[in-house]
Image (cartoon, rainbow, N blue to C red; front, side):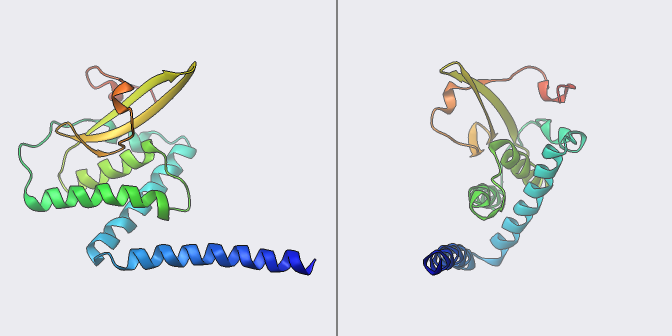
Length: 168
């Protein structure tokens, strides 16, 4: 019995050390990025809640694909890169595991708030008689978030504003 208690404390100690290690890595980032990451975590939490509660009306407006703006300033490019990085870190720091669709909704909302208009893509592929879906975000055909190996194998849902229809 005593051995089991010691092992339990050891395991909890390892988990605590991992958490401390994550926060140490986070500590070196600039404050502006930390605030952006907190915003990403909050928006992702809201999106996760809306998706689990099946409240689609609040996220439906994010599906509209605006035409990309002509040229971005250096500051807007830095912002887009920081949002992209925050989506990667969101997977590590969020207590839930946000899927690609949640991360795309989060990034799109964050960038739209900063007047950077991106395009959302949703695609499907069939592997071994199983359907696989994926969502990703692009700006002028460059992936902002959602890159995975074999992304070209996905058949994108296309059509005039297909996401605006009452499919949700």
